[in-house]
Image (cartoon, rainbow, N blue to C red; front, side):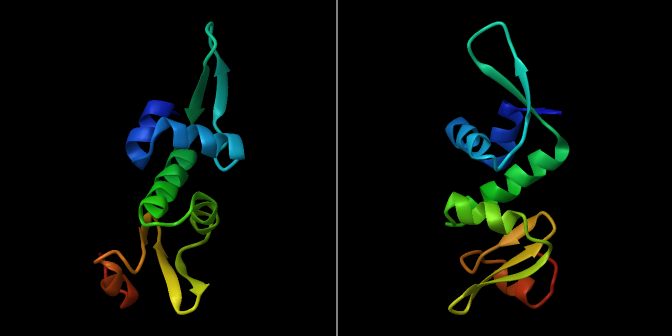
Length: 110
């Protein structure tokens, strides 16, 4: 299990982003009620990996709601219309802005 701090650090996001994603239902942590007013969230490994994928996509310029949809996609090429596409290769996600995009597009390892 990973804590909120672990997820924030691994995904490269802020706690505010993590809280928003949880409230939207994009991440489903296990909730523990502590003695204080805060909420303790624990994340399984698959939720942590999903948060990392979403973080990569958001940093690549995708809005969070679009990042959520793409992060759910199976590995491959996801067309976005107007000639744009995203290459998803397991935990690796690249956009055209990523310098490694061309090697991924040709099927080469990044």
